[in-house]
Length: 252
Ligand code: IPE
Ligand code: IPE
Ligand code: MG
View: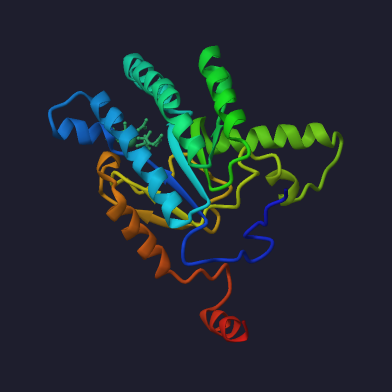
């Protein structure tokens, strides 16, 4: 299926964001503040993921995309990286059955070739098992980078049309790793930093950005609702004027 592009056609918007994308940041600082090792923050962060998934399903969000491990996070100390990998494995082991029972589809995007073969197999099995679920699509971005995504899409696009030039945005977008999802309506970054950190560079073109100081392990339903409320107060113009929006509303 081809998704509409915010730069080609004006997307339909609704009070509840159809697609929420989150940079789950602040696990380490959450732990340090409590004199705990950083990895305790990551463990607590998994619980916050579980509750965000449930809350989004209850609120009618259709796509929830979570940045779990960036292409730059390999730069961290080896033992932190290996704990993160182990947490990923245990979370898959524990949660997939429950997600499936709740009609949640799971996708994992990123350069998975750098992961353990066993983990790659677990991911493939989880995706296969939940492929036909349609309540909420949860995408975990793992070893993901926005630039990696654009580059791998270019490779695929050029391979599909060798010797072509004059490619269109749509031709590229259909090869992005999340081509199955519309562009995010709402971006949330927890943990106080106000940057994109190489997340969904292409797809965030017209996404509403929301930054909160709350550390990811503390991000509860109330915090999610505050982000959605902020989103509902935005005027999404997609290049038009405010007066045009008022007219369009009257006409509809
Ligand atoms: C986000 O929390 C989780 C990952 C990047 C895997 P951090 O680990 O970045 O936590 P802070 O930013 O150091 O507090
Ligand atoms: C972004 O957080 C990546 C994830 C949450 C997975 P980082 O903590 O890695 O980002 P920077 O390094 O502060 O930009
Ligand atoms: Mg961080």
